[in-house]
Length: 340
Image (cartoon, rainbow, N blue to C red; front, side, top):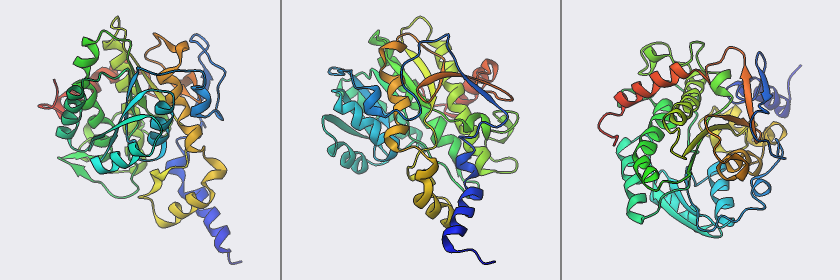
């Protein structure tokens, strides 16, 4: 029997979206709310506006990477709506400018190309030149690829963009944050892919330069595991400073993350993604909640899904402190010359 085009698309989406849906399936893992930490009234269907509804962020400064589309744009829009002065980064100043000009409130555009470590250094310098010290740093920008291995200066591209570029940015911003003696919050956009799709060994340190076989799904999972481990080690290093670091999973969200996917997946996700995915308004809620909620004052080193801190059990490395420390050391070597 010949499938109709709609049936073919639905079948293709169910099969081909494994790299996307894998980040939302919990098969083989047990995810429970961590009730040892403060819990709010929000959940999977909450929106960014809802989780910030009672907040006045006037006088606060927020830096959001990847502000020109998807979750980054919605995060910037809501923060500016609540009174924060948002520093929004885009891959080019023009993209960031268009996004910042379209939101209600104060938003200042900055250029940040995460595949270029010097761009991260320059972005932090621009923040310093503005005389603004962020109260919130939301590391939102990221890519997912569905093709062959790409290298940036000899390092696998997804790892560079999703993790190493942000690693340089945060290290460059840190002297400003520490000098302010503030209670700044650093929010890392990780993913369930960090435990669903990462290599079985966690961070496969012998394959970061594409030394062995390349799998796009594993590469994305590795980068998101790296984000979670970065947050974990940063929290360890920032103890007693007042600055916190937490990681979040936004959910599967209907954004342009699949723009580099094969045509069938791209078209299918555009047509039917709304059936399985959160809206950007819902997807931005967790990072906005973790960045702003008074309930989370002093909470650091946690991992959040659907606006709640959670504990993940199963064959995962998201809380592996030894791996986090090793990753930090390796990242320092990979970004040598671009750190403070």
